[in-house]
Length: 85
Image 1 (tube, rainbow, N blue to C red):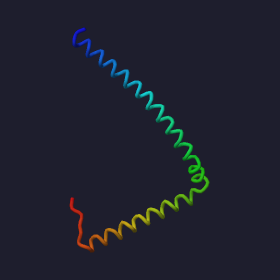
Image 2: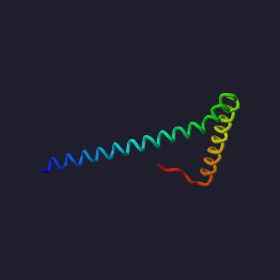
Image 3: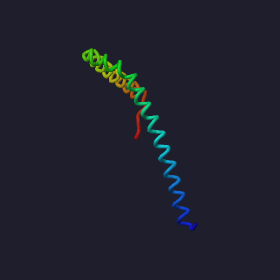
Image 4: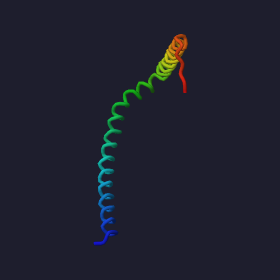
């Protein structure tokens, strides 16, 4: 067996190993997707039943986040610390 044939054989073995790993990974991903769907189903039902409540909570969380960002930003600038890029 010459060097080229040996390299081709090694590459074919690596390809076979990669295919086996892909099959295994595909099975794990599929199981993960099934698990996420089981967990998300109740939440999706709540969102469908109460769209106004969900949007109110999202808006409230956004406003609170902006207020916290503003407070942190103004307190940092009052202390003399600044961000430098």
